[in-house]
Image 1 (cartoon, rainbow, N blue to C red):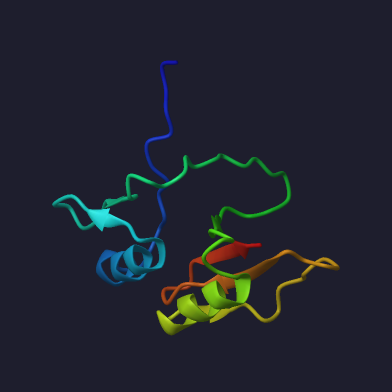
Image 2: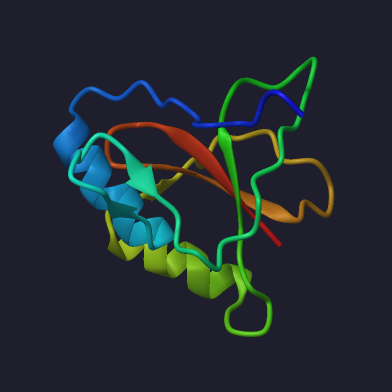
Amino acid sequence: MALTLGAIILNVPKTGPAAEFWSQALGFTTDGNPDFLIPPPSAAPTRLHLDETDRTHLDLWFDHESSTLEAEVDRLIALGAERVEDWPYPPNADFVVLKSPDGTVFCIID
């Protein structure tokens, strides 16, 4: 294969605060450049989900053996995230929509 997914680019107002939130949220580290966050060696590969109706955002999955949806939502809120209260959830939604301190929308998937 000639290509691999090298990075997902998030447009943020300020990279410093965004790097702090996302590195704590995901357990990523920097490798000398704080604008590039690197996943831990144990991280699963990232999938590319194509969708004709949804906007660009991150879907975050958690380890069901060590956490719950509610615990992850609470942890991210403690880091500065907020619930997106007016999201049009489908019946029996298996996700929660949050936004990072700088307003980047993302989902926690159960």
